[in-house]
Image (spheres, helix red, strand yellow):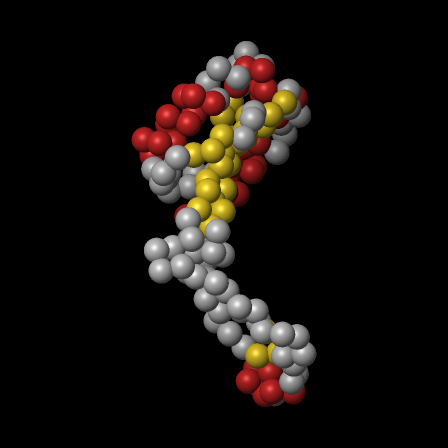
Length: 145
């Protein structure tokens, strides 16, 4: 039985396109494995690490996501849109063994220069409070960094 036949047997679901994420290359996988092996013996060293991340919230739903699984037994979802877009809010925060930062609301689009400004304003002065005097900054290596 192929996938199309199985979908037809489940009458309350319909197939819609799903957002794709980029696949990890062999190089990415090798680098992640190497990093994990290099750090697997850390114990108290993790107390020095300060982590950070940013999150964008779109007021009209996720960027570019226009398909979903619709349960036909339930009412269809309606996704509102605005002709000029619904706007968005981006936040940034960090945390470590010794605490966390406050949430920073990022103005405009985040790019490398804006990211450095956020770190300068919201991390440099408090990093030692979260990770000690020799703290280590760990970020997720997103393209904007």
